[in-house]
Image (cartoon, rainbow, N blue to C red):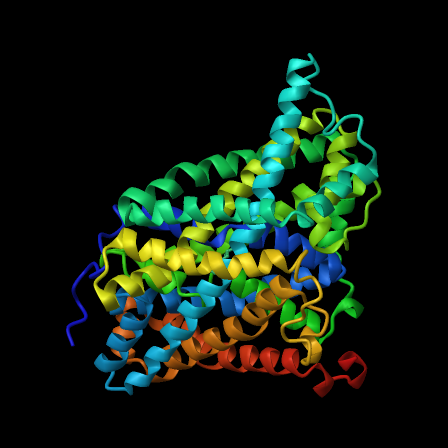
Length: 483
Ligand code: PHE
């Protein structure tokens, strides 16, 4: 098996190392950083959760990001084909390609509900954009958001959205169509171009809103204290499982995206520093998102543990009471939209590349096909907030007993499929893949290679395996946590 050819059967590659970094950071930075991370950190008491999260990123996430990108580059195909190629080259069973299949399936399922949540974001982009225009034309560009609305009216907007299946599905369709359009345009002309424009814009907006919160509120210090003072009593097996799932989700691990993007990286790119940059950028953005959101939430005395409603209800209330809140609200939701789009394209690219390689479909056809099926699953998730609101798909299973359709899909992928996928990557790269090939791909030597290999071969499988086990069976550690 020749593992030296660059590029893949599914199309072109990145035009430069910078292009790859932007695309990979674009994949990593998304709803996970700005919606899921602050929500989980808030629900799990802040400091201790965040500390564990950072530990997971450094000890598990970083070595795994490198492992997945190198598997992709060494294999040079879609996620399944790449793992199969590396297994063949290493004289191992072809069954290892199941890692690719598991990952592509996870990415595909994530895409289907991700697009629904991104649809909520679009709703708020329009609502806050209209609100800002209204303020502008009435000569008050620096008004608070949704001026004249009561708190109930502002939070009620989310309930209204959820009660409206046609609107939820329509917004989901718009987001999915945008994702399909970019992926259909190709790796260079679609994905890379989107990342090149959207990521810098995202960073500028993120810094603007964070500075705004730091200047306008008096709570920046409280937010820092909340985020970085650990209260270890808030930690339990479920929180650990959640932190790991979040680290994997946020770094786009185990969902086919990095394996697939890795295949488009040219041979001369040094992967270890590149993977490090991607992991640090993603984690940095998550921290900034916390520093952006919590001061604003605290400034109006709202609860950081508000759950998924944090950014869709708490923040609009805060923007209502803050100077220029109308403008900032619009900027805030726009930046989330940009981040979500560069992530969803990586979720779609994994299964699409596989369809192209496997069935020789043209790229646009493959993208439309995969996007279409994911859209249909998303429709069911959207209906889970209204028509099907009683449905608990895995209600018989205690950890999913209270989860609606979207939450179930989110929980099942995040708590089970991603940890399992990451575990298998670590075992494969750490123990079964050809050592010479692996080392040469990392570009690491001496002690650094040994350290990395130690993390991949020992620390990752054991830690990820344990967290997976205890997450699934919380009763194993503390009987009290099982309830
Ligand atoms: N990392 C993305 C986010 O944080 C989500 C994602 C997961 C994207 C897996 C690709 C693959 O929003």
